[in-house]
Image 1: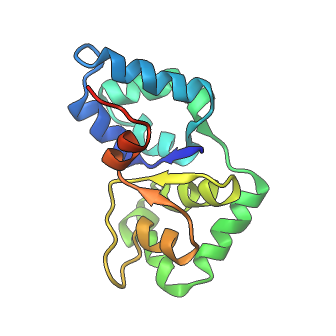
Image 2 (image 1 turned 180 degrees about the vertical axis):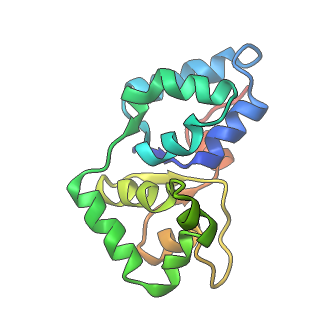
Length: 156
């Protein structure tokens, strides 16, 4: 199973599981990255890289092995997502006007094309244009960070 990480879980890991305090978690995390079982997308990198914190520094060190560029098939699936008018709300007006990166559709597309599972902090909300809603619509597995850790049998 390939896990495709959204921005939120990466922020949470850095805010709650400091590498110096949880070295075994980071060893496991790094091992999954090395095996390409844990990936993310270039657009998540773009959302993170302009921050000025330890996450941005770490992301820059992981750029080539973790944050993958989209394939043609992924771009095509992003277009499929946006054919559904309701899901066009994933790109909020503020991001459009400021030209900010929007990772969500690319995270979903990566999981769909490569039979992966999305890991996100977003929660399913009835009639929302959230990651879990889009995943449910397209039958793509979607979990939160705690469920991911449980699936990998991580205990600390």
